[in-house]
Amino acid sequence: LGTISVLTALVVSSTTSCYSMLYVGIIRNVVLFTMAAKYAIHFYRRCFSSIFADLVS
Image 1 (cartoon, helix red, strand yellow):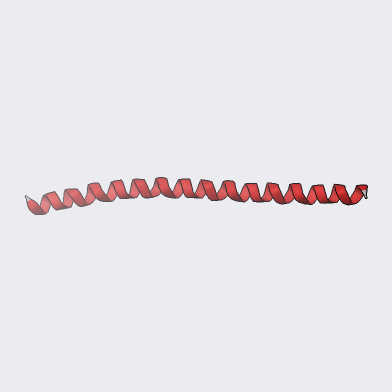
Image 2 (spheres, helix red, strand yellow; image 1 turned 45 degrees about the vertical axis):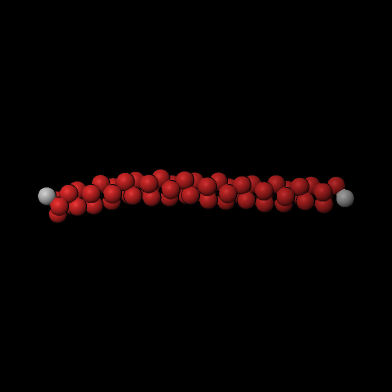
């Protein structure tokens, strides 16, 4: 009974740590992606606005 409970605890702890690592990785990727998207939108907006200004002038 003792060994089974210890094994169960080990399995549960390993799975929870694995899932927490997975969630941390997903959150980190989402944050990085949103930051990259913000920078890309900013850059493209500036680029297109300058092109538009050149066309208009």
